[in-house]
Image 1: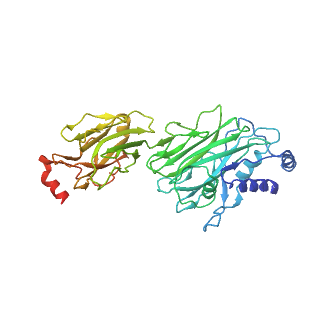
Image 2 (image 1 turned 135 degrees about the horizontal axis):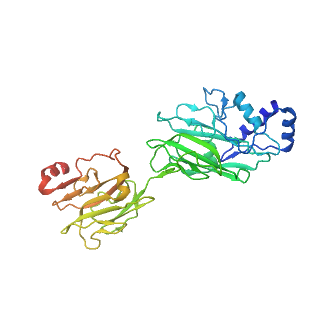
Image 3 (image 1 turned 90 degrees about the vertical axis):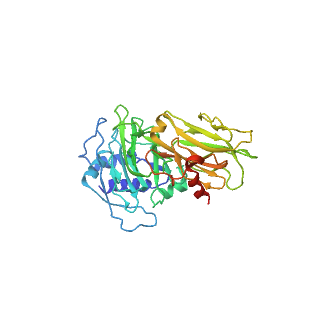
Length: 409
């Protein structure tokens, strides 16, 4: 028994190495010793289904310098399962064991084989994770390669960042994960995993280095489930919608004397502010969106009025004609318009930044002869809060002349 626990402790220590989660290696000498001391172990066949393994973890009321928890003791069930996984000459079912570090709560108890680690409905972000697996037969040459999408970092497999993330308190929210089996020993199995995400709930089951979670929304992962499934068996559940990536709205303005500016996105300013230069045209397009839909836009131009709708990077305005743009409209089509709202606001001569308009309503002025100088455009998940005030986005001289006079005072 002591020899078996010693093997487990070595595996647990290896599990804290950055970027790699190592499999337990069973040499022939170890197997012979286990056979001689544990004669009563029943063989586990290839068809054995994944069992639930629960390891008792010592409580961690204070965070150590490495924030790692040592195994205090193993339940009888966990011991029996682990003994049964060490079988000479036979293939055994692999088990995945994992735990998470949760915001304000610290390390959670270790769970296994598809059980939930983390919290649901408490608004707590996962800030660390540790995992390892055992079983799978003698002479294992296999490990799990991991990649995490962290707030402000993006996708990251850098050794330094990951070392801090795994086994220590990491004060950046986890937004997505990818896990990949490396080696050939466990080629009979798929590694499935799914995450519970803020505002979305449980997403679908991803496998074998597919992304699970979100990117670009700023939503935190709050819980995770991981399990091995034989190749000839179906996924544990739905594999649809495993990963949601925020579409990217790129836009730019053509400015008097400066020409086309570089593309910007996510509410950044295109154009100029306070330099007295007129905006003469705009272009916009959507990237990183897998469903149907596009962005359409139109401009209100000096001496011309409202032009027709443009899309997919086409120019709206009067580039090269020395005519000022006075107002704009944006709208979304297809599934894109069902999933998101589009907000936009403009910087107007004499008035500065007006409030936010959305989904095809007008932003700017008409009849005053004031130029636009800059523009900001932003996608927001459908029904979410506006980026700012929305009361005073557009002024028509005939309909709201007196109100606009108050704005520019």
